[in-house]
Length: 172
Ligand code: ZN
Image (tube, rainbow, N blue to C red; front, side, top):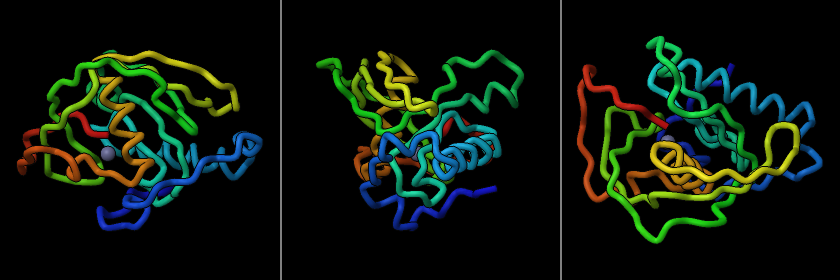
């Protein structure tokens, strides 16, 4: 079982490599995905995780509402696996959003994100798909693809603040 790497780990600050399409269903890549799922399941506030967050420099992220599991309410976002994801379309407008990151504990901040995005990616079976998103899911897509480009939201947030134990918004 893999754990999250610390904020100064090189994988969090490096452009991750594409996964060769014909290796998506290989044992090696499937193991990375299952390690990511168990790492995310161990984060009670977590809703998404990128491979670099467990020290693997590959272009993979997953979405799963662990918060809904642990708080016994219906998840607001779908489960998905995105391999080699690309934003192929986005709204003209950006909005200011509050953001937290599992790799940057006890800190939150405000970032500007596109309101709507369309992402193209491969799923864990190697099938290509396209998915439009707004709201939280659009924010997650942008935050996770930043991770794959070695960018933390704190690299571009216009303000950040420290929080206590009682303040627990979603983290990605
Ligand atoms: Zn993050």
